[in-house]
Image 1 (cartoon, rainbow, N blue to C red):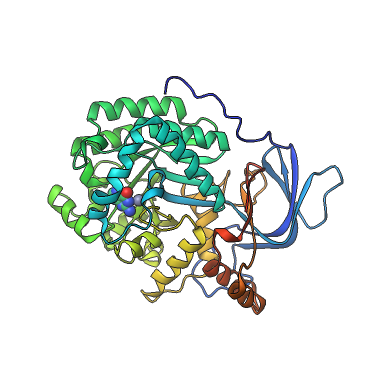
Image 2: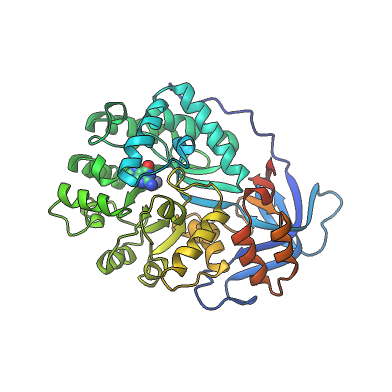
Length: 444
Ligand code: GUN
Ligand code: ZN
């Protein structure tokens, strides 16, 4: 794509003021793992309140109705949450979701790489980016850290589509210069050229940020990993995203490709890729030394329980990561994961922790999907909560849809009981409306 894309007309102009009435739930800090109560520190619950939005930002929260000069939308009896932040998801993989019968490496070869090759076509990229972001909004997700493909055109399409929707989005071209089909590989020279061009045109523009996107260690040469480290260091404010320690066969392959490294994580650490702006997906097979390194480096792990269950990758240990001081957020990892729903992701996270003897409170899960992810990304001043001054990204939800959820909701005797049932039983069918920067952009 030559030059800057024209601004899109897809979004209506922001009303300078909007008041939303609903039950407001967000967090002021990490509620932790202690047995949850309705007064757990960090939880902020403001039932039947008004969220006041001016020029796309949160101007206040109050119990009393605002003056008659405030346009309003009344979601009384519904839950209002900050927009979800999905910290690991693949734009070109909606078409391979729920593909049968393989673990990670064969799944990539059989389903994923063929699908991604189609994104060399700018028309496929443009249509795919629009469909993908509209799908995120239809799931109440307003910000994401996204893998496109190796093709520059897929990144242009994704940034342009996010800008048109005013979404906070982090992405960057996949770096892959080996062990992938010819239609999906770059070279050192083309990777550097494309990255520099994309950073120049998109990074820091509006709500967009560039993320150096090492697909995973097996598809990048040592020289390309070193390039990614240099680019990350040379461009302050950019991020790094990759996959790490997801699957046992993958681990074995990485050990063969990088015999000098103590662990898979060390391959990245040796190239300066593990730091406070790194988003590392999975981390199923970390050991204590890896976790200590993560805690010290302030990198974040995107836990993707739905994908880890579907591909049979294993059980990531959220609590152990947390205890080591490593921030953990949540990723749907579509198409390894089978849903863009962050509720389903939280529900699967609960089960994955339960299999390891740990109980995940709804507060901890909801914090990770909102403010926790925002803090780990250094974006808590903008997203993840109803703090005054934040951009008004939020979603209104039905408490219960369908006879079973309604029966369960009717007998909940505490707020945590109600929200825990919601986290396990709700999905995108519960969505009432999604707002991005105060714009009503999706009706459920
Ligand atoms: N590792 C390398 N590429 C991928 C991918 O596309 N999905 C998942 N889940 N793991 C990966
Ligand atoms: Zn992934």
